[in-house]
Picture 1: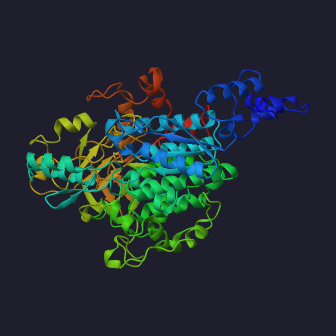
Picture 2: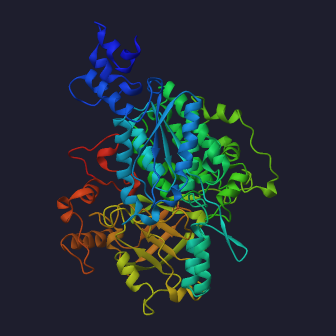
Length: 618
Ligand code: FES
C-alpha cells in the first residue's frame, strides 16, 4: 500500500470486492469500532481520520489499541486534584506497552460541591460514563475516580457499557495534625464539630482544625465511602492490590497509574475480559466479605446493590440478606476510623489489601477472576503479604479481631419491611444496640434544623430520634443527613450517642448508633417510617436484627390512609405521588425512576432488567 493510500485510511480495504461494509461498522477494534452514522461506513471512517489527524496523530499511533482514559479532574473536586499527574503516568504505561491513550472528560462529583447532594448525581455520572464509553472508539478504558460517588458511578456505567475496563483511584489524602494529634477528613470533621457544638472546643481551635483536616490532595483518609469503594474494587478484581491504599501524593500512586496503563493495553488485546464476564456472583461475595472486614461505609451497600443490579447474570442473586449473612461470619479486622482509630496511610503501611485478603483467605472465593485473567487466588499467590510485627500492624489477625462479626447489619421489622442498614461496629454506645425508647420525630431536615436545639424539645438520652423524608424520592438524592446531631442540651451534658433512625444515608466517615436506608422510605405510600409519631415506642434489637414500632397493624393502616387523603400535611410536605410526573429535567427523571435504597437507588431503566411497563417502580 502506498503512503498516500495509508494516509487515506480505509482505501485499500474498500477495494476488496468481498469487503463487507457492515463489518467495518461493527468492528470492535481501534478507530473502526462504533462508527458515526452517515449512511456510508467508509466515509465515516474517512471523516473520523480527518478529524483525529487534526490532533497530530500518525497512522502508526492510530493503528495501536486505543485506550480511553476517563478524566474526572475538576476545579470543584479536590479529591481529584492529582488526576492530571495520574493521566501523565497512565499514558506512559500505555505507550510503554504499545497502546495509544486518549483521554476524555466525564462529569466529576465532589461531596461538598454537589447540591442537593452528590448521590443525586451518581446515576447521571453513570449514564455519562456508560454512553461515552459506548460512543467512542476505545478498546479498553481506564476509569480514574476516587471521591465517594465517582467510583460506583464509573463501575455502574462500565458494567453496562461492557467494554474492558480497569479502575484507578486518586488515592487517600495524608492526615493532618492539631496540637500534636493526627486529624483527617472526615471522621474528625464530624467529631470536632460535635465537640464545638457541645462547647468543648472554642472557635480558635475549630478554625485551626479546619486548616488541617484535608492537608493534601486525595480522598478522605479514613475508611469512608471512597476508601471502602477502593478496597471493594480490589476485591472485585478490578484494580491492583496496592491501588486501594497508596497515598494520593506518593510516588507509589504514580507507579500504580503507570501499571494501570499497562493493564489497560493487555485488556484491550484480550477482549474476553469485559466487566460482565469478569465479574461473577463470587466476585461480589468477596467484595461483601471485604466490606464487612474493613468496617466499610454504609453507602457502599447502596452502591453495591446498584452495581449488582446492572449485571445481567448476578442481579437478583444477592440481596441485603446476603450482606447480613456474610457479616455474621466475617470479623472486623481493620483498625481505621470511624470503627477504629487510624488512617488509610496506616492501612497502606500495614500491607493494605494484599495483607487483608491473606487474612480473609478462608472466607474468600479464590476462583473469582481478576483483570489479569487469573483468579484471585492465583494473583495472591504471586505476591507475599508484607511481614510486619503485629504490634505495628493496623490489620488484626483473623482470630483476634477488632469486632467479632457483623460490622454492618441489616435490620427488618414493621418499620423496615424491605430492610435498613446499621454500622454496628461504629456505635459509640453499644448499649443502644439493644434499645427501646420513645420517638422524637422530625418531619424532614428543615424541621430538624429548626427544633433540634430548642431547649423545650421533649428529648432525653433514651429517646429515639426519627428523621423522616430524607429518602431517595422524598429528598431527591437521599442526603447524608442520617447522622442527626445530638441535641445541644444533651451534648453539653456529655451524651455522645443516641439511637437515630432515618431513610437517608450518612457519610461513611461518620459513627454512632444510626439506622439508615429504611425501605420503603417515608415518601412511599406504604411506608411505616412516614407515619411514626412523637411518643411511639421504637424497638431496635441488633442481635435479632429487629427494627419495630410498637403500634398495631390496624393503627398503621389508619394512619397511612389518613396520610394519603391529605395532599399536603401540616409540615407542608407534599404527599407521595404528588406533582412528580410533571417535574421537568433531570430532577423529574430522577423522581420518576429512582428505585428504593434496598435496590441501590439506581434508575429503573438503567438496571440489567430495565423498566417494565407494569412494574412497581419502587
Ligand atoms: Fe471526596 Fe471524602 S469528600 S472522598
